[in-house]
Image (tube, rainbow, N blue to C red; front, side):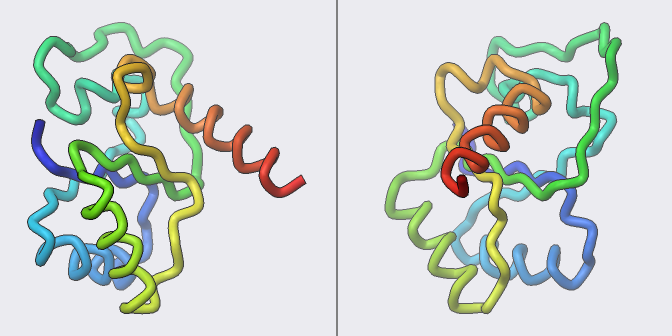
Length: 124
């Protein structure tokens, strides 16, 4: 599995460049997920064998919140990403996940809704 980070809704160009500057020295591939692909299985977006593009994207869904999915990273590498954000004074991405055997089957909508629910529980 390729070490990569899937990024959603990083619209500010300077912010995108700053994030890239943190991830490139760590040799982590960056993939910006387009809103048109939010209905695809996350496993497909992460280029995992056995996942194909979904032809029927009925019920299109989009969201504006930034989201990050870490794919194939070790605990140490995840720590390095977080430390890199702090060191470069980049505001964190509140909705973040590590790719798992379960969530790789989901589409971005399901993961987004799951992360929003977890986030609201933590802040209530």
